[in-house]
Length: 362
Image 1: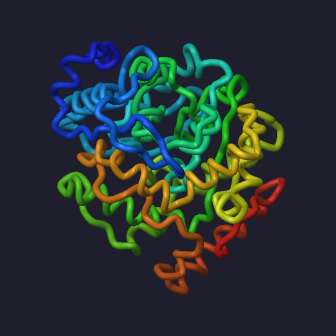
Image 2: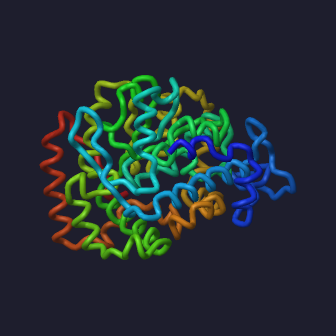
């Protein structure tokens, strides 16, 4: 893996290999995070433009794809020391390298990290946290994957992004992370009701299948539902039930973990964003909070991030911003599936010292 951490941080080679697919971002924002076109893109920290940083990231991903050409598309994560638990991870992820670095040097002290199970608002909250930290309610052209710890460890992400690394993102279960990751940093854990997660996962797998049908054959919703109800070792990034339980149970005694309900953030974004702002210490004014609310409204963010999503089209076709609705599960679950998940949730809630608040429709 050494070559991946050292390769092409001088921009010339990487930019030339990927320039055909780059979308120029603009330099001057206007209302609601929409950019005006401008001939010259602004320089970021270290003199790198957004396009140059994206080019390096894509080059590293392409090298990773070539290195795993003969591997299965998903594989079990090697057991973390001290636990026998395991999860399925995509082979393109560099989970082992990231976890080795985290255990060795940890996440940089006072980092901000958005943590979620899959399809639970990661892109949304990553964007709004960046706006809070930068004190500017403008969506940039950087895809969320460029802050994702599963793709590359912190040292590589910082080389790609310079010191402009206000927020990391991860889907890692809590048990994977060294204790320093959630004692020296501020984690914002976003969770979503499992029925809507299941539906969103179904469409996510469809997007993976359309991009790579050989590696990811199409799944029916019934098949996806049975996977979702299965154990952690049978699920991508583990079981929703285990993932949410670990973070929820630990947040009660760890002030560095803030739990945010996806549905409550939809219902009352001002209050929830103020909670996030207080937790990460960004010191946003009421005016900035409202600007962030406006700039990260679902339809607005979907439009402003459309071009950045094209950077990962070779991994996923479609949009990460599909609907963002609460209660869409009612259009997919049959009565038996709904009953089974309700019964599983009832037993799961009994195992919690404090029940997890859940909202299934607004």
